Image (cartoon, rainbow, N blue to C red; front, top):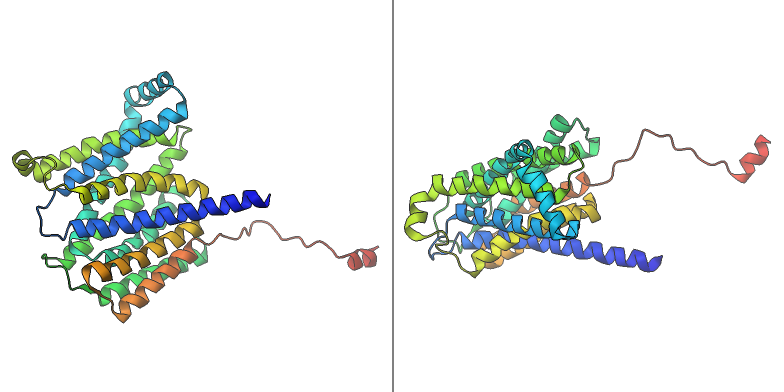
Length: 336
């Protein structure tokens, strides 16, 4: 029994480590690729390629889940070609996630990785609000307190934002904050909407992912055409790509799928630890790579955000049942 518990703990620690490293590395490397002075790649094409890789990975996982090629094809025909209404339903989060992913590139082109990582945690109160409104769930008093703590921490971080001395490209702090705000709203709404769709039927998670990623490819291709169409035709779809850009795309692709699997085997406390650890790692990396000058208010705000993430994920006490205390041996004798 102890052996099983140890294996479970080791696996959870592995999940925590990978989830933290992926989140921190994605943010820092994306920031790095948007601040170098070499030929700049098109962020819209990177988002589109990410959707393609996610689709391929989801199909591979569904193939393993179904067990045979014929069952895989039957499932795809039934749930993709034969379900236009479901495809239309999943196009909503596809559009919102596409906007969110593009806003991440805009934000990290104008904000330091650590500042972005802290500010982006506003997705927690946004998701909480969407959960209350769309799924009719309630939050505990501790969770509401955590939400206000998190907002206070982000305000402190933005009150005296840390500056990066080694970044030479032109940046617009207001534009970066606006992009984070849009990304936060998109993350909250799309996450809760997708959860609602998932729980409305017994359809496999990977089938739903495939439906969403097919719509996502269409949406992101439209984004490429509308935003960078003429330049992509002139310079090429993969203009400015190098091994770091491809690595960022791989992290974005694997990170989303891996997180959805990890959540199944861990809990909110571990997710909170992961988010807090990613903030710390991003801050350390920003100091080393970008010369980030950390202020006292930034430190206080970041600590407040980390604490709020942890407390938000604490398990809620079930108050619907009364705690019945077993009488002691002495009490039983007296009653007799």
